[in-house]
Image (cartoon, rainbow, N blue to C red; front, top):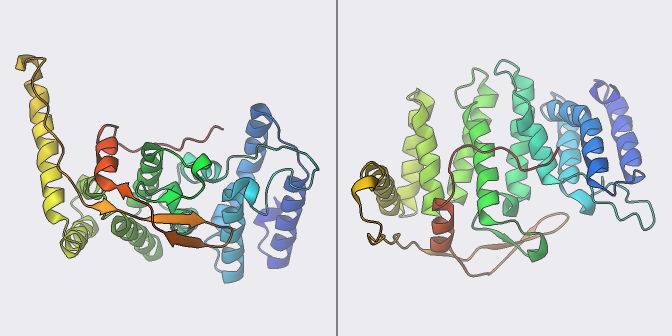
Length: 305
């Protein structure tokens, strides 16, 4: 495959060819989308490895290429872009790229594959926050996804990063920890989500996991949400205890109300090149209530492939 060529100029030519093929390729139905996704999968997998290439020009070009693919029909790699009145539905944007990142089981000893995926995840969370963080709302209301879906996407990425925190390769482990910590800082306005991130660190008692837990608790103290998190943990334990006693509880037993949490007013506008912050009222209490009602286990991407 030409995209795997180590020579930079050859690689650039391969990506230009990929763009030319995509912009002149029609994709009008779900069947055509699935076929195109399958054809592109090995190409995307190769570019993902290149995201961690030793040549900085190659790695940056690879990340930029996949970010354009994430933009879907608004990006430079829009399917059928040069066909007049094509009406192409595209290949899925962020969801498709997520499926490529998480779909294959990457061996822990294949550090370049892991590092390439982590490099892209780091940029995805930075460039497309409204796709992942429950409390951030895109100005494009027509394409905004439900809070629950964004929450599951975030957890799937952080679960992937979590698996590499103890990786023997220093760069892989360091980037995994950075992704996890930066995401934790982003969700401090939604204590329920922050509490879930703390809970996920309980799967191991290794040195890195213990240090990460301490750092998350330090962040909680810094933004003054430690008490809210503790209440959330107690509510979870109470809920588990109640499940054992459910048979003896009358059906008309009054329900408890969830603790209130601070309001969050973050609103980001997605553009082709950056993000613009504006105000939008969004109660983090409402978000926490909605998230508490769904499964909080690791989830897979919602992309159809």
